[in-house]
Image (tube, rainbow, N blue to C red; front, side, top):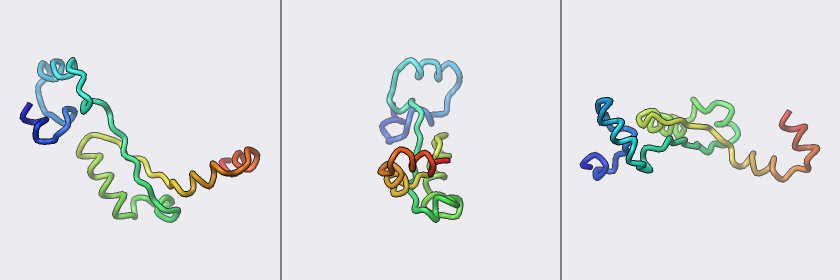
Amino acid sequence: MDWLNQGKSARSYECDEEEAALIAESELLSLKPVIYAANLDEDGFADPAGVEYYKQVADRAAAEGAQVIPVCAKLEAEIAELPAEEKAMFLE
């Protein structure tokens, strides 16, 4: 309980197998897997490892045992507005 009251997630709590089994039965929201999305511009999306912001998000995700996915929301929005034929061609 102290761990959670410090704002830490249940999935990052280090414990033995017996405690882990007990915690798993609790259905805590902070036991659920997490995926971080790092919104980058087009240049950053081409090389996310070279973007400081992405590195910070990746470090945080790694510390929590989570994943990080680079996205370019602007590009995704532009693709979504294309007619179906052009969208398929662009995505190929």
